[in-house]
Amino acid sequence: MDTSKVSNARRLILGKTATLALALAPSLSTIFPPGAVAQGRDIDFVAREIIKRDLQLQSLNLRLHQQCADPNFNRSRRTWLWDFGNAIPTEAGLITATANFYSHYAYRQGNHLPNSQAAAAIDPQVAGQVVGGLGSYFELMSALHHSIQTHKKGLDFKVASKRVLILKNEIDVLQAEYDSLTISGTQSRAYLAEAAILKDIRDNSLNEFIRLQKSSAFISSGQVTEDAISALRNTIGCTGNSINVAADLKGNKRLNGQADILNLIAASMITTRPLITNMAALLATHHRQNKVVKTIHLLDGDRLQSQTNDFDKDFKTLSDTTSATAGDAQLGQRMALYKLQLETETEQKSLADYEQSKLKLSAARRFRETIYGPTKLSQSVLGIVVGLRSQNNATKDYQLAASGNVTYTSGQIFNIFELVRERIVDEDSHSRLQAKKMLPAQRLQKSAERLEEMQKLLEQ
Image (cartoon, rainbow, N blue to C red; front, side, top):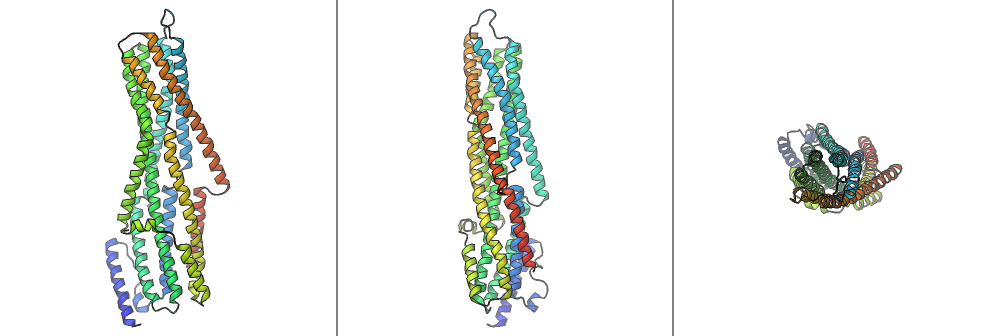
């Protein structure tokens, strides 16, 4: 081959790299150190430079995964505690109120429900809503703190995507140089096989970044939306029940009806919370996907995400090629690194499938956790009817109030049993996975150790 043509081609690549460096600000001198063109660089050097940046991209993905795309199990325990701490006193107050109304059906002298007794039955419900509300506000503050920490670590979307863009463009420039060098190589078949491996690693790392960004958006948006709705509905419900206590003490039935309008709003928020939360999570995921593809200039983003992982097939091709020929000694050394990379790719796909199933489960669980919402709606509607109707018939009022309370009592019983069941299932699953060292956090730690091992192999 004409060496002057190869030299001109490499100068053209370097010129494009210089233009890219001006656009991105960070210097790419580490890719093309001074005098590199004059001295010449062999294909093994370029391959190591590509792998170096691939490992940096994988390291970024790993830290992003640990920080943003792996739901905190302690959070699920805390939110359960807030919900359970809300449900138990609420149920106690409902049972008391139901018993009171049923025992005072007949309105006769000495059988009228005392105002203080009616108010006392609502106090536990207020206490439960205070627990639930404070818990939700705590989780919102925790989410804010997590967001600040993510930014400080350079893992927020803006910073991380810029870093990925830089690494992607550096890899692409180096890959172009690698491809040009394989043309004149004596072991061109082996190096062509390695070129496919290097492209697989690059594509899979970018795919993983996109997946993690989508998961991060789904998790964070879903949690914040759910906590915000819970905080607001507990605040509104607590206000409504507090007014109910005051109304009962004063014997102001109309004020009770007005307070139950607030309870109706709170009940509506319980019922619609899973739909709103899941919609917010899905919209955030779709928005983040479009944003990340545009930010890191992945014009072929859809193709990247839909393509099958050919790493195992390309690894076998490279392995067969290097076994059939004497090959290059350095290429043979890199085979050990690619073998570890194959383990990484396999584990990454397995973990991604597991996490995707968990996200679907969390979306479905939100609906199960709020099945009791319509029972509170029924109680609130009957409370409004009792409070605002013009007839002054205590017996009928007690009957309607008893019906509403027994309905909501049944809903809360289901809610409590569901909370207990979920806690038992979650703790059991967590313990079993932990014993097998298959928790996402444990698997990510293994990935970190494998990544460190690959880095050591590269430096040999």
